[in-house]
Image (tube, rainbow, N blue to C red):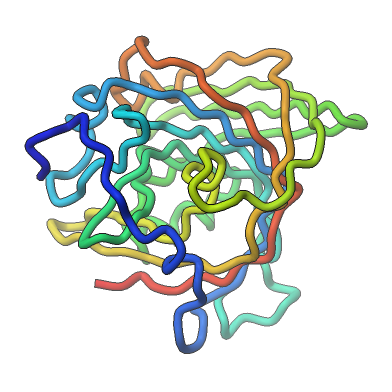
Length: 247
């Protein structure tokens, strides 16, 4: 673990965007993604991330992303297309690296599908929770709600936002690329660090404007109220291949 929590680290941010060799474990379609990002003092996030992972800082601060979206055509490689699952998902994540590889560490993931929650917990050891979720789009306005009860404690999201102008794919080195173009996930499961890899075209990013936002997912994860709301982005979505989990 780095002794200097304020130091930004130069990492290869292009290599993870390349497709891994071999057959994907499964495929998914991610649609209508909202990316809301806060920045925090590094020490506030460091305490919530496994010691085996380094924080991937930007401007000396740790970044936390809240990403509500639609999952479509979610299936393992051996499943027929008609069997693909469709559900809503919201993930809360921060940015880390390990052995020079930048990636994501999830604080929590909400899903409207009980089957998806069970499968992800069993196969990946990810902190998935069942939630009651709805998403409605009316022109350029999207209203998205999520309510988690029971396991993991109560946590809610209620957001309304407007989709804005096209930004196109994010250029390497930009803040948008740092936040959006993440292809590796890390998870600590039963005392072991595991990773997964996804592959997809660069996000076709757009601007977005929050109309209303109430959420308790950050505090449920143990994050303080001192985070600074920094950026809001949107993407219509991408086709995704999933590789892993890998030891």
